[in-house]
Image (cartoon, rainbow, N blue to C red; front, top):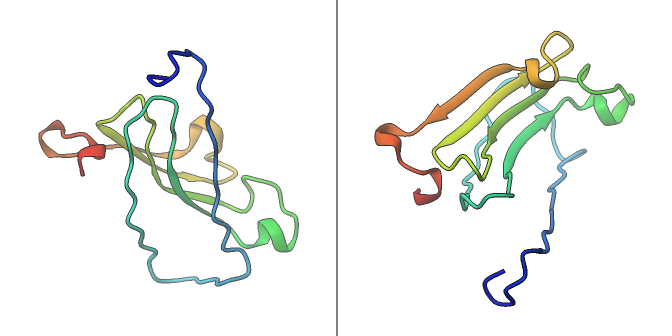
Length: 108
């Protein structure tokens, strides 16, 4: 912490839960997300299948789409991944994305 000189910093977390607000089969989802590129942060934009809450189905059987995950210690990379029973955990289907010219996502 540059203000106190401490090497221990406080972090907080937040989640916006839209369960029960809408469901869709076709279409698209958009967001404008600003990332900081700070080590220790992991902003993400993702969706779960509605039956995770409706029927109590466990992950990954409901499916998960990680639209964007930005690992702070990797400022030049964002990830998109599909998780399902055959593609769960580290074996998710997807991969990394980089900006042209090797720009940082935080400069965005």
